[in-house]
Image 1 (cartoon, rainbow, N blue to C red):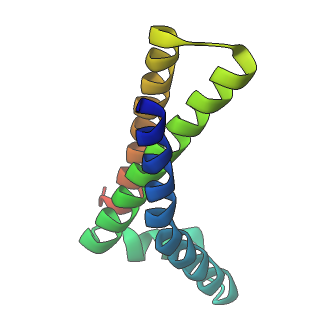
Image 2: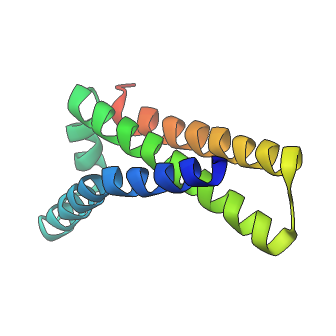
Amino acid sequence: MLDLRLYLAQRISAMIMVPFVITHLAVMIYAIQGGLSAAEILARTQGSLFWFLFYGMFVAAVSVHAAIGVRVVLSEVAGLRGLALTLVATAAFFLFLLLGASAVIAVTVAP
């Protein structure tokens, strides 16, 4: 039953990520073609509640998706099972979430 729930969670997180990925890529292409510098991009994102929420939700979805993927790879390749597998996957989730959140804060919270 756990495998089914994790399978569904990974597929749902992938579906959630689709509009975030498309929007992120579109904004990056716009910024590059517009010739914006890193300072100009930060000036537009810092202090923006919209971008904070956008990238915060993106990071949450990616963290869930990636941690489940890491769990599957460790199970298949490293042969981890049971509690060890759960602990490593949970640690991966929190690591991804922490690193992503720190990036979101750096880009969106005004200094």
